[in-house]
Length: 132
Figure 1 (cartoon, rainbow, N blue to C red):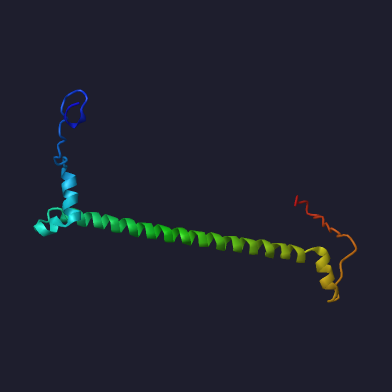
Figure 2: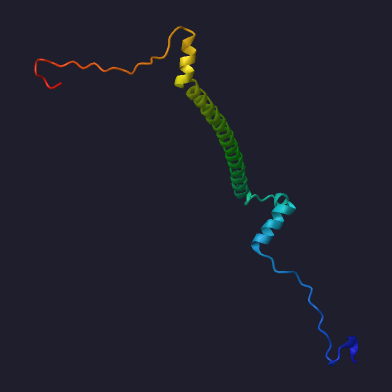
């Protein structure tokens, strides 16, 4: 065995501990998040950051607006269901009260009674010869 325990007899190469490649975006992000951009005194990204902040504000405001509209729609749907149920209940009560048997019972107290004779139709003939 040779030095460092290599079986083949070749010495191991030391690993390079160099710096990783950085991109422009990575440098920019590090400068912004680390605060180096503000300490350097250059504000070349400042308009872009203001634009991003404005878009974020618009996005959040739009989200709140949409949620409030959804809540309003849900409340209106609940109210519509309640009004629909009330309409159906009132309609059924009216149909029950307007039945002939119910009306005749109520009118008996006032002295009016239901007619037992069938309805008679009166027809008048014109002597003038019109076809009416």
